[in-house]
Length: 373
Image 1 (cartoon, rainbow, N blue to C red):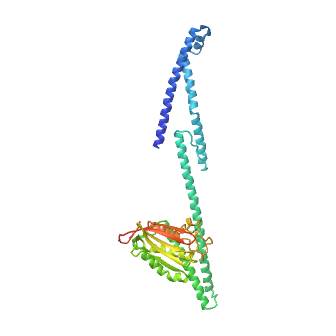
Image 2 (image 1 turned 180 degrees about the vertical axis):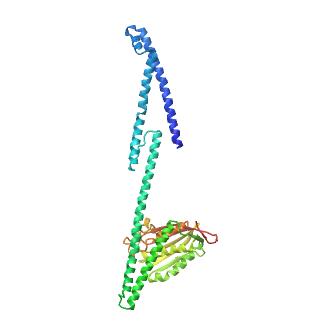
Image 3 (image 1 turned 90 degrees about the horizontal axis):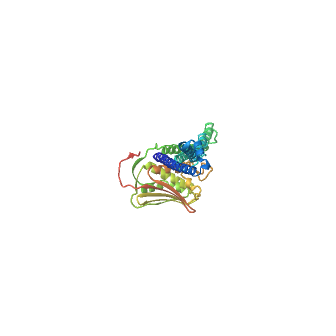
């Protein structure tokens, strides 16, 4: 704003100075011309130049007339470009006001109107970005509703179907009844998992999920979780391997939330790395950071999908079958939880292995349990 005012004052001062200079030069020139005409009239009486002078009313009238005409011509010629430019700005602003945000104000000349045009174009760009963000948000909301509806409807439909069979005694024997009950129980657990993931993700995004910080030995936690998953890995024909330092690797974290991160990464590795034999969990120190990696050796993630694996409801396998993917929120939840702890998470994949890696700041401080802000 200050620059615009300064530029306007400078332009006005320059115009006034130029006008005074031109006016002085004009008066001086006209006076010189008039004096020459007088001398010519005295030298050559036969030309009757005195009659011409008397016709125009003498020196004063002639000078004022010529000076006035010159000033008018000067002002018109000097400002005609400015008037045309202002008219163009007005037309562009009128189109923008009518809702055409593709319109831009032409940026020309170098005066206060140029600065105005630049500011208007900046405002239009911000409006375009705001509208694009709003459209993206609306599309994301619609996708969220569609995906949640699909993911909840599939197990719910099966659950209702099997409960109806049981309610109508539509089973052959006790064995088939127990089979139906087991399927209904599995579908109910699936629904509970989906709803939990959805609520956790929403609360994390809105920063409503409290994080209670305390010293956590990340290496010890990784070893315990891998031991707990040993039976599940054996059932899938897989084996877990741990690489960790000999001493503790302390970070400031919420144990429950960090366990959830490891569980989501391990579940993802088991789901998509089943064709490989091993799942490696590596924990190490790098400078002032603790680094944890969960590695599988199944099918690689295509490069086109790699930047989006932490997006909510994004799946490399696009069929959205409950047998080929989870809720689609596991990695998004892991990302949000790590970021709430002040860390970063990333994924790499090539022809031999897929790595999910997160980093957290190390801490040597022992402090009491407290919620983070």
